[in-house]
Image (cartoon, one colour):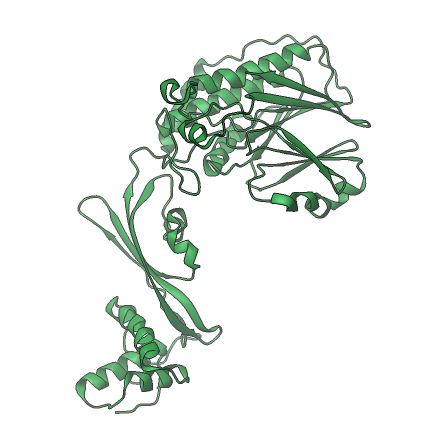
Length: 441
């Protein structure tokens, strides 16, 4: 039998023909010799065995068919990786998906990454099991590549994101909701911008009083948000504002549909996911309507590390809700950091969980044009649940405290000393920050 590779064969087809020849006794080759013919390299017997085992798996999955004698390959077919993926629907309602994936070692342990790479919506599916086998494959373009044969089993979420339920909820909410009348003393544009910061609300977090010494749940979160907004409006009732920048996200919600954070940390919640989402968005609508009675409002999404996907969904709902508004504008773009220039002020918004000390050097590059025409440059960050201010390299970084109660983990870890409060800043177009206000719980 011919040992050399035929023009019509790709790597897998060539290997399959050699393998059949060895089994039939028409070809006398060791696995290390086959490896050398396939990849043009010398390898140890053990390395060859491991590498060829992955090709065996591909053949077993029907990802390779030996072409008929004289068949002509499609253009670009040679040396391409097998691209076939399989999906099985099981009797118990689960699904099993198998495919070849190029990923990092840490990705094999990331449930949400595996769901996404297999094409499953994390709002509707959860991971039951996963198996990832590492193997080397040869590509004419990339040479030897490290890939994974990934197989996962998933099941539908019982408490996931139900788009129909959400749509029905807000259709009903729109029919019954009437914004409460706020009569401002002034509704003229001035030279000031109000930035109320209600960060790290953790809507629907559960804190049991017997366990933690404080009580917190969905209803308390709603009360604290709306009470803060009402208090700022009352305190500033005689002021003129050109605009209000209202940042949402920043761990406004406590968890994703799985009941865990984006990174898989389980959370204590007091309500089903759909209730948390619907009530949380309704609360934001009430808060925005109150603010829009005294000035134009720009709603800016900044995703947190607890429920970034859910906060993005909420911002999309708000964008649709206010699509015809002349006083409310919603920025629902899922960017990690946002910048706004107001006169000679450059304000940066981020959750602040990832940048560390790099935060002091990002604004100059990411918003270079605005940096050059401003004098006051400040970051407003959350995440730490405590207040703090640091100035470095011409940038002031302000950490905003949290409105949320302390759950069992925070109490056990000793993160229980910071005052629960919200903050609001007033920036003058020329002078920069001129006032800071607090609402204490």
